[in-house]
Length: 295
Image (cartoon, rainbow, N blue to C red; front, side, top):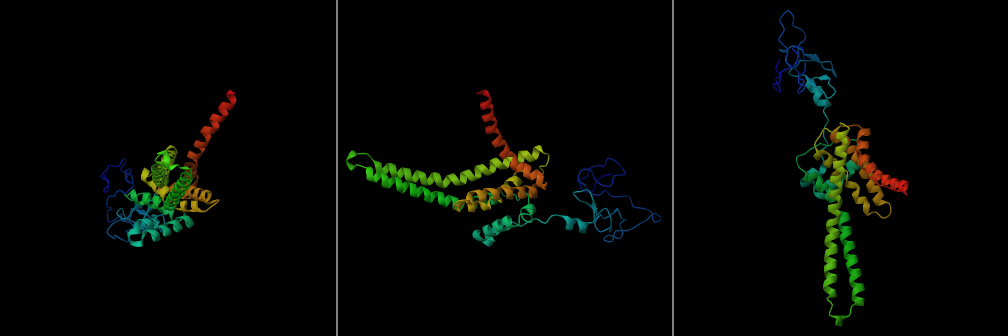
């Protein structure tokens, strides 16, 4: 029997579902004497199965197979399909950047179970999540540039007090070059660090999910989960515990993000998030213990 959806042959003439795409296989038309229940949507078609959710007879044209392998009618199948969360940041052209960032941050941070877990795995655009990551680190970038200006002014004032104009040494040029270099270094350092850390940890977590046999979506989905979990980076500007609060929130939101884009359990997502940290901590601890034993 040939599947009408993917045109693949079935293994058995008694098979009800295609082993390649999961679609219902057509059944031969019964004779008038053997005719049984009919599909309410297509009365001219005999019923192929009962919907596991509402109990309605469905023909092979309406029959769908859920992720758990349950036969469903077309209406129940659409009802059980996950409704993806429209990320406000991806509508920033209509909402404005500040409004889109604020809505994405509050919705993902205060309701991650309904937002990040229902986020679309891929959107076809890498720039959307990466631009959100950079925008979330914009306050840190501005703070780093201001610190560079402060350090440059401090060095200039200290050097000016010690400079002898008759020495023939071009101190002003050196101080100016130091100031410009500091601004460029601090201004580019924060975005570079954020992007490097995101791709590094996303790669490690993607590998961990693959090793546990739970990876279902491409690497773009893991990067999206990381980027849209980075909104609390703005808390790093809060003096004292702001940095630690931002890191903890980023860790928790990454778990929800991986659960959503890869449709995996909380335990496996938590293991994937914590595995790189445990490996990074385990290597220096193992080296230290090895050094102690050798001594």
